[in-house]
Length: 262
Image (cartoon, rainbow, N blue to C red):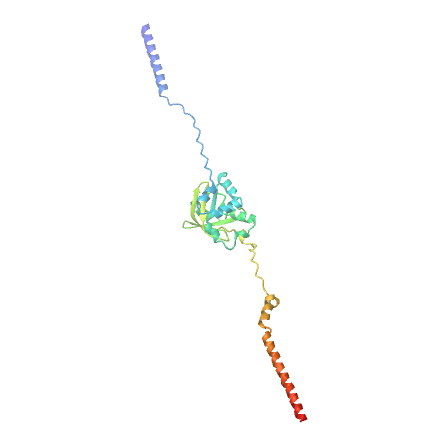
């Protein structure tokens, strides 16, 4: 009887150990906390390279470098969360800009005109339909330098208050940089709506009065040539005629005297 109890107890212990071991083997593994994968930083955008290979936009790029605005654009494109949108005129747009001319502007005015071609935020083409209802949009020139946008069946029109143009193509449109080609130079009303110093006119040709012309050596030479002096042959002829007349007079007097004495 004692042996039977020992056997039963041993079997129960073995069964319990087997159950515990099986439960541990089938238990799910412990969850390991996973840290989120960091979002890769956007690649650096070199605006000079983009504008050099597209376009041609050489004239606009020259103005960017002349006014140092290229540094402002680069900083806005690569060091801000908002990004940048740039409207770039082609070279022939500047050639067609005869009046008014950018050459009359001061350095500060020229810099404002170049800054006027950029918005301090990235806008895709689809975003412009929303700008249509938001009224004037501020540019990097700040203050009163604003643009109005109109979406006409997918064609984006820009109005500066002084000049109107439209987007003709997308040069680059990847966040954070958007570059769109326009067919005219954007001229802000804040500058061109005021009096701009006109281009100096060329000096007029000197006007010679008739009196001065008469006193000039050329006039005297012409006057002398118009009334030539008598030639030596003409004066000698006059002397011969006068001498013959004197001879006839003397002969007539002598003949008269002879008649009286006779």
